[in-house]
Amino acid sequence: MSNGCWQLYRNLILGGLALVVFSFVVIHFVQSNYLFSRSSSLKCSDVELSALNIMLGESVSASHHQWITNNIEPPLTIEQSLNVLKNNVVSVSQLVDDEVAFYHDGGVLFSGIFSDSTAFYSIELLLRQFLESSLYNMDEKKQLLDSLVCINVDYIENPRNVMEGLQSMHSSSGSDFFVWSQKNHPQLAIGIPCYTGWSLTFLVTGVVAITILLMLLLIWKEFLGLEIKRKTFEKFTKQIARGEVSLPENISDSDGTLEELADSFDSMSSHIQRLLKVQREMINAISHELRTPIARLRFGLESLKDDVSDDVSVIIDWLEGDVEELNTLVDEVLTYGKLEEGALALHFTKVDMAHVMSSIVENNEALLSGVDIQIEIDLETSIVLADSHHLPRALQNLILNASKYAKSSVKVSFFSCPESWRVDIEDDGPGIAIEDRDKVFIPFQRLDNSRTRASGGYGLGLAIVQKIAFWHGGAVLIDDSPLGGAKFSFIWSRNYHKKDVS
Image 1: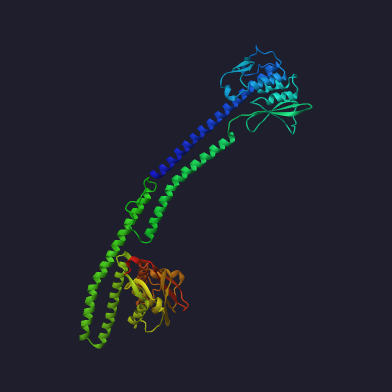
Image 2 (image 1 turned 90 degrees about the vertical axis):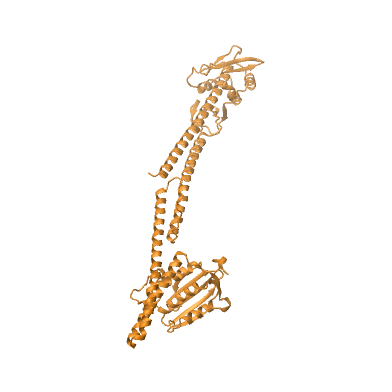
């Protein structure tokens, strides 16, 4: 496993453990808070119900408090009981201490000390003792219960089908809930709320949601780094696909996630660059070296013409033609090599397209003699910005290429667009199939191997045209011509290399 993958897994594991610990702490805190709140509510209810039973003269043995009742003579009247409860409001915060007292007329009426001798709070028993007492009627009992702080009581509008007496019910909120049913009296709902401040279900759900969100953020952060590296390598692969092999020596990968892939890219880029460099140097060297023997052959053949018969002179003329073709091939190879490696400097100047077209036709009159050339150029918009040497070279290659395959006519049209210029060269020849249109720009590639060099050339003309278009900030497109053959569109930008325009 690579260092990057191990670091990713380690971060996810450590992050997951941290989130688990965080969730445990929060849920434990919420649970402790809930248990403390519930215990406080039960303790408060125990005190208030015990006080009611003491004022009625009932037993409070089920209470969690040990009560001292020497200063009270039960039972008290309803008015006296309400007055005691009114002047001794029990607060949950006051029950932190283990001792509680009820006062009347400046003295202690009765008091209690908290004791853990009872295992569970017997709220139901204390409440039943109070409700079953015959001292007060039902309305008076409800009035007393309403005056309590830690107990909620209300009539039930839709009576439940329960037995008479006090019945314990289940509450989804976690609070203790009782129903008091008595014949010929409305049912009472008596609840002991648990004041947690927040719903336990809501808090647990929130903690789980936050935990999942933090985990997703942690995973997103890790994969975001991988996505940035992926885009970096995608950019490098596109550069390699375009032939731009001069990549940075060291591809950034600080945590080693893609270290092996980075090394492979560096090695591949360097290897491709070395191969291309060797290839270009070899082609250039061979092309330059061929010029000397070609010049010797041309000189020797010219010298032989004076000493041979007319029949042999014809053969020498053929050989001179072959030598000239070889010299042309060398020139095209050198030109293509310079365009390929970007060593050829282009100088953008104002060029008159009408003059360029007429010069091409005039200089190649012999080659174009069997074809009708139609040129359509608006003289008012014929001035363009281009390299005055290489643009005519590209257009000449396209026109000569169209004339080789045209049956009778070639049409040349010039268009001045807002963002670019375009020259269309069309012929009425056999055309080019859609699947073969990309192949015509490959060096030394001919679609029909049966063609002779006279018709098919060396396969460098269109490759040179494409490179010249590229260095002009444009492209060469191929489509079907209304004449029946192929249409080559040479397009270049108006705004490319403005700083080089003189």
